[in-house]
Image (cartoon, rainbow, N blue to C red; front, side, top):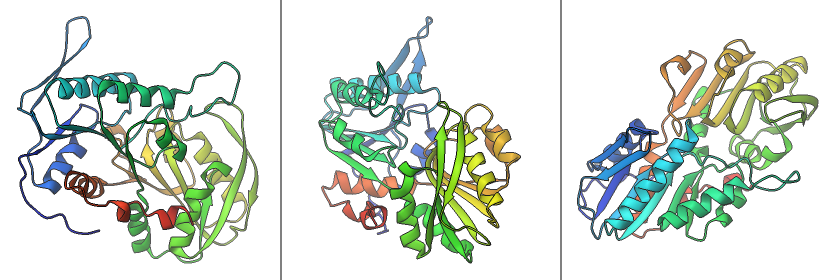
Length: 325
């Protein structure tokens, strides 16, 4: 990745919601600019209170907010921040969403269900965002749900560099389901290794049953690739099945660590040797167990923000050749 030119620029302002302040601070450090002064509070009845305390009139404003737990609070906070920036006469507002929530409902796969990914996209546009910068969407077509430009980054360089340093031998990349083949294929191409797929049947939103392993994993080190981990049930079941089929060490590389409910306990007691995640979602102290390694995406997002601000191409950051292998 090209080095960011260290220079202060008064026409750029970086603001942060309350969902992931540490990531926002690290992005600001990479850009060598101060993080904007924002008041985030609550009215007595619980309504979100926001005030941007810096003058942002005519400025290029970037608002960093992951719509992670609690998702409803964080989405509403993002919308209010965007509205505040718009009413403060910002020249351009870019919503920086390291993790885009409500993305799992991206189509009507059953009768009488919503398409929440489209709904949230509409809300962000209606609030006044001019552009969206996000990373590893649950489904690529969500880019088309927005009526404004969307820059979709991939964490494959960050996660891939870490895996490369481990120098794993006899490696096979595994997709935990058919939907993740495209992402897993990108890693398989990067490491010039074989690809396997876990064929599973989903019993409910949080429970799955592994049916078959497509491909050979016997006597091989395995890296499971996926975009997010919620309760960890699917991942742990996939790891068990891979172990039964003769896999050696099993690693999991998951971009967004939602880690809800029993996820930490499941990972701790699983056959997974290491779970590698990014800081698109912060890890609370109880989630920082030895099996989990968290890598920062601050440099990647900072580089993209810098290039957007100066109207430079960011296509080199997309790693399209890898993810579309």
